[in-house]
Length: 363
Length: 150
Image 1 (tube, rainbow over the protein chains, first blue to last red):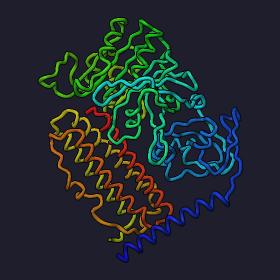
Image 2 (cartoon, one colour; image 1 turned 120 degrees about the vertical axis):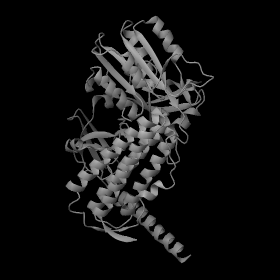
Image 3 (cartoon, rainbow over the protein chains, first blue to last red; image 1 turned 180 degrees about the vertical axis):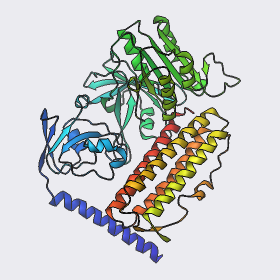
Image 4 (cartoon, rainbow over the protein chains, first blue to last red; image 1 turned 90 degrees about the vertical axis):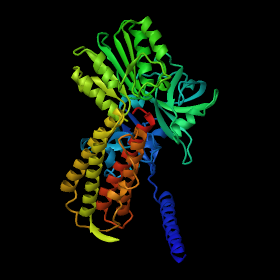
């Protein structure tokens, strides 16, 4: 018993000391107002010192992607800090390569604003906005996947490129967190944002989104992502998705056919069983309207006695290998788990695509 | 509780990584399901990559700290981590991924054991990096499971 009390007292003392130090830092150390010089003085912000760079930028409506709410556990909030950041912290090193460290890339959530800073932020990120929206509809796609449509309130329009994503604010016991979801609605529908969400047991973001009802308010930031669709109409687009990774493909395909009705595009989608198949009929209808659009779905589990399936079987990289001729000018977009990405990339490279033509979301 | 050096703890982590790479490699060879074969083959190669990074790390960056003494609880990350795991060639991907998360937890406990001690900044920095890398790996495994592809 005495050990328990001793441990409790010790832990209590440590917690007390930590609180005291935090309070003392807040009260006694005043960093004052610090300047953040962005992109060689294109913009200069004045923010309260003592907060993280991520918070300081967010306060000024510059939204750097971050999935963990600034706890340093997702590694998404990378930006280049040229001056004033101090040494790289151990909490940053697992997320930064040596060349990134050499190039002054830092995690914005781990950099504390103590003095004036000079940073470089890609133009795309400066255009990211915070949106308030309302749930317009929810549709059950499979036993664990829903399509959720947001109608935008403020701002009322989003300018997005196919393949980009938004970060939805979800409540959690530790305060709001942001979770990334690809936009599945095409870029020519600027007043709405559609998401395709698989329910992950215990997942903060997916549970929140699956429980939303029509007219519920939502907050998200975006758009994020560096994918640029090849503007050359002779370049064939290859989309390969696995599991529930079809949202960005839907956006790419519908945006593509709005602009180039005759463009060549192949969609490959792999899932396990017929119960996981969705959007297939919709894509087949689109293929009737646009003969250069090919749709190939493949199931990897053995077909059950009560299932009917006339599509491909096996893992999706095998279908890509079977149906894609080598040597065409192509751009590929992949979405799925890393072993699938690796297998598909290998097949695509054998078909003549080079690394620069193959895009995928960082997992 | 034994007293060992930083080098000993890193060697323990390397041995465990070797065990994991071999274990996943073995599973990959005998798995009945194609998806489990593909997944475990990837996981085996991933552990080899981590092992190589650890090896490189211990050569290049640990020289100054390798003989720092540490308190060490044995059997945190060794063969005992496999004792409760009952994977077979018929196991599905979800079982494999659950087991993989539990193996990662063994390494997390090993690194935390060091970080709970009053160690110098260099040692702390090294093990914090290793801990974060392992935690990130755990998140990746959970995301693969959530995608339900294999």
